[in-house]
Length: 263
Image (tube, rainbow, N blue to C red; front, side, top):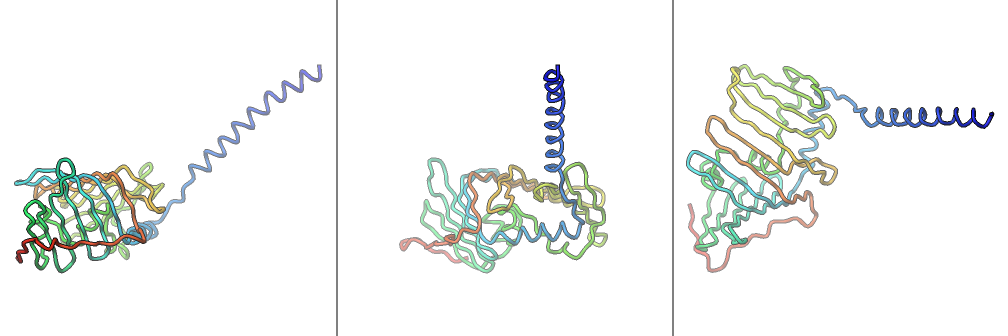
């Protein structure tokens, strides 16, 4: 009889302890420190600056009023001032190699073995990349990051936590715009950014998905940028991403027999 009671007690206590342990574990796993807007912006900007270099391969699709095309590519970004891009056609055919810095550029049209070189400006960048984007924004676009350095010492107009996302809104009454950022609470990755007019007309939208943990940083492998007013969009899908490789460097030399044209 005593054995029967003992077994009964054990059968009740063990499941209770099991579920209590599971509940405690779940509560522990789900606990996430909620950050103030100041600490959040500081962490986001610190993470962006930790990416000193990036090597990646993938596909890019650019759409404008006059252009709609996609290609495979390999990219090397060396912050703060260098982007090297190789563009490939079907069967891995080398179509172009591009080196852009803050001051100069080299565009090698591989099929014709013709290189174009000169000083960089926004018009040249648009000719090369088909979109209207300054150099600094171009680096952030390819690395899937959002520059928040101007927000470091500014309180957001609105700051809230909605489910698993931080929502930050900055209103610029002088420019007549509002910028909104959505940040994942768990890994502190920016999943969307939007710049629009005070009347809600979208100007620039960025969406970042399919994050991969690389060197303890959350890096998006899918990047979408849209300039609504100019009807321009860029879709980037990375197949592989490496950051801050010690052996990373840009080694680009023009073929000795290339025709060089200075713009």
